[in-house]
Length: 115
Image 1 (cartoon, rainbow, N blue to C red):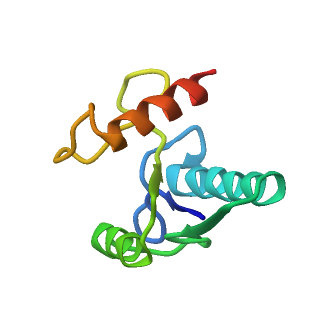
Image 2: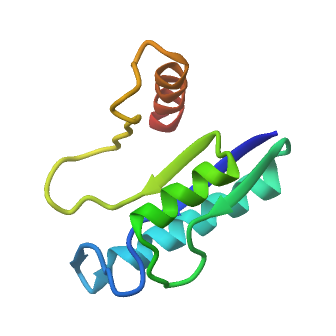
């Protein structure tokens, strides 16, 4: 059973980027809920846990501690970058190697998401 931790960025008192009448916290939550619904309605063999499912403030420490205590296999933090750049980015924890298992999974996921 694969455990996927979805983390809609920002929330509550932290709006994230604001522009065009949108707040990042609302967009990231909508994306995370859509991902959760697609995964739960279309696939089996996984569990989903979310750092938040409403507009609430959750610290980064609380999010990562919850994911680690739950034993998440994947931590997916969703953000909408407003400060420049283009496209899609993904990262792994800086203490891990791109050549290790996590780095290889990140590369597979990156290539599939880009498609």
